[in-house]
Length: 310
Length: 310
Image 1 (spheres, each protein chain N blue to C red):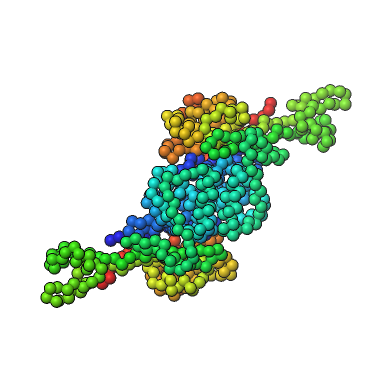
Image 2: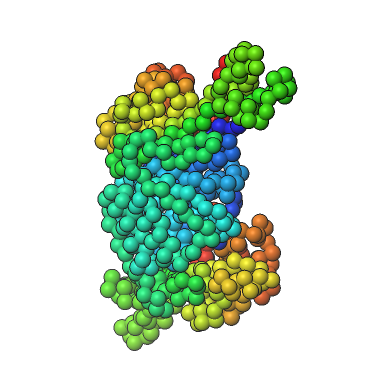
């Protein structure tokens, strides 16, 4: 069964603390390694958690507040110094390209590999990345500056046809590929064998939505409906609602409300304000409206288990 | 007695390792806190070592390779978010101002305090900072891109005049200030009392030279002559001399040679290549030519003890 696993590299908000780093996450979908935001120190966190960072080919940057991108220059440079020669795709605000290029100009750096930029257009449901296993689409967030979240969706998994079934019906390769797309099998005598009896181990495609940074905004709900895992920022406790509104952030209670209204399967909160040494009250608050809430904890991974269709 | 203490925050070269961070140092001279270079993660290192970073008013950036400045944006931002309202002086290549300003433009950040830039002119012995206790001057280094080291010198310490001496000679405040400048005392009967008999606890002014990054360059020697502590980069073992030359870095043996020829009192090496998990061979190599060599070790502080004049 292919992987669908999220590892937290940083979960603080703008000001890091002695125990929490700025935002960065690594999502592994079928051995595609997607880096989501890249706060200062991300390359050190990757080393600390023994993640081979040359396996990262796609980096998604939500917005240009420093706690979400200041680790990118160092990571790009280290990839270069350690011999990378394959393309690195960066999905980001257009202005980030200018920020990167001015720094490489003055350091007189010529990378051994290509940076391929894909600029945000700030439209919802825009296809950013697609291959045979996964696709990534945008979800526009509502923050002080333009900001974009991301939804990662596994493609419909085809499942397997067992040797026994292949032998029983004497299936050709063409027939196998045809059946894997979901068709029923029609035998020579006209009998129809339903697809469910042919295909085994078929699982539901999994999905992950990353929503940070944003104010509470119900326009998100239809876009992230039914995802398996929602990461939603929860910078403050609800007693600081006014501060959350002023700074275009969300309270833990509100993150729970979004999760509940969008009918997601699991909520992870993060982007904690430095004022909360203990994050348990934030988790408890979100759980008052959405029970299946977990906290983002650095170095910890969440596996989204595959669920059989039948 | 006033402090003269150097704390190492980062000592790796361009690629950090799981145990070593990019370059940053904090020098405390008489409670002036000077930050010297500011590699990625410096703000986390300051927190880790429980150093109050709002006490830093002067930051010296040697050059625009990322491992020497990529932590600056995050540190400046955190100082802002944590309520700073006093000026922060940055001594740096002119281009760094552009790099900082383009990022604040796109993040729509308006700092609550002033950044005061002092651009390098790449002349030797230029006065960058001066107050009643200390002065800081430039030393031009020889690297792949323009690069500037720094020499921190305590001003001549005036020492004290004890109560007993003041009473014995019935000294006025004007006379005390005059004598503290080094003059002898002439009594009414014409007898001359030498300054050494008036002033006690007078110590030699201390000095620290920071030389990173640079190729081996003997033009440094007269500029750093006799300093109490020299930090000189030692990126490679001497068996990698060709690589050192290519990349405009120094070997540990060469760092020892510079220390020996400049007659410094103590040498600290650092800026270690990531290939050296164990830095002991670098230290041993430097010691073959300069015995009083110590390694830069993160979180460790070196105190330069005051030495009485007499």
